[in-house]
Each structure stands twice: as structure tokens, then as C-alpha cells.
Image (cartoon, rainbow, N blue to C red; front, side):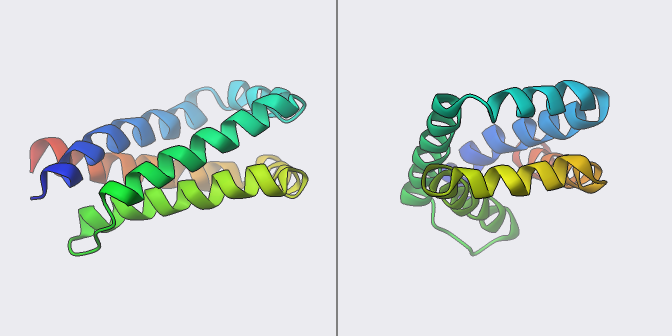
Length: 128
């Protein structure tokens, strides 16, 4: 397995798992944090810049799609680029989408997705 894939997976897996579990165990806290952040325009801008830079770094050092784990890592990088770009360019639109997702059952689905990805990536990165 590629050393860069393994390294990034060891970062992404536990992080995704923690966020997914956080959504289930601290749902209201996550909703409050999101609703406070959306009012902080500098916070949204900085979040967008951070997501964009992290995504660019991941894609620059790891734009591989040859194994399932490599594809997940690269997908996370590209997703981070898209998220950062949108937060910087059209933050109000992202806010509306975020509010829609936070108010429905989507947050539970997102939590499940994060847990599944976190467990899968962590398993492959640390145990396989």
C-alpha cells in the first residue's frame, strides 16, 4: 500500500469516525456550533480557506484512484476543495443548503455516512 495513502487514511479515518459519532452523541451541540458559525462571516471564510487548502494538499500529494482506500482518500481531498471553494465563493448558498440538511433527517444520514467511512478507512489504515 502506498505510504501516502496510508498516512492520509490514518488521519481521515479517525477524524471522520469522531465527527460521525459526535453527530449522534452531541447532535444539538453540532447544530448550535453550525448555527453560530454561519453568523460569523470571518469564521465561514476561514473555514472555506482551510478546507480549500487541505483539499489542495491532499490532491497534490495523493491524486490516486487505484485502490478503494486510495479512492476514498482522494475523494475526500476533492470534496474538501469543492467545499472550500463554495464556502469562499457562494457562502450564502452553502448556508441555505446547510440549514436544509440540519433541519431534516439528513443530519442522521450524514452521521451514518461519516461513521461508515471512518470505520472503513480506519480499519484499512490501522488493521488491514
